Image 1 (cartoon, rainbow, N blue to C red):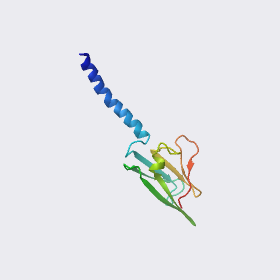
Image 2: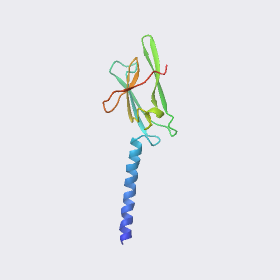
Image 3: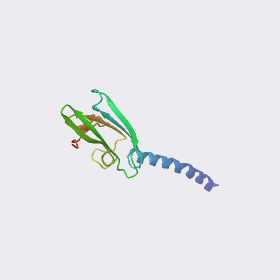
Image 4: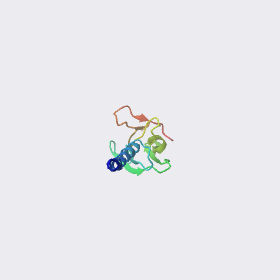
Length: 126
């Protein structure tokens, strides 16, 4: 009788643990196809303070890249607004973002931090 009760307990405990572990890995960006939301502030076709966003899933090989072009009077620049190796990698210097919020400035594109700290700014690709 004790075996039956223990077996039922383990049967219920295992799915709960599996869900918790999966959620932990997903939030840390360790699972393939993890959902992402990118918000890009300052897209050139929008007015100041407006934003543009899109949603996607990172591919299985974690090689997903989205590149955007930006233009100002007399200047154009491109930047990888999402790179799996940078934005979905817990070991990158800027960490994983499930909601990647960018502020685009002519001197540099900057990924805002959720904790309100200093944003992470990058050099333009071109």
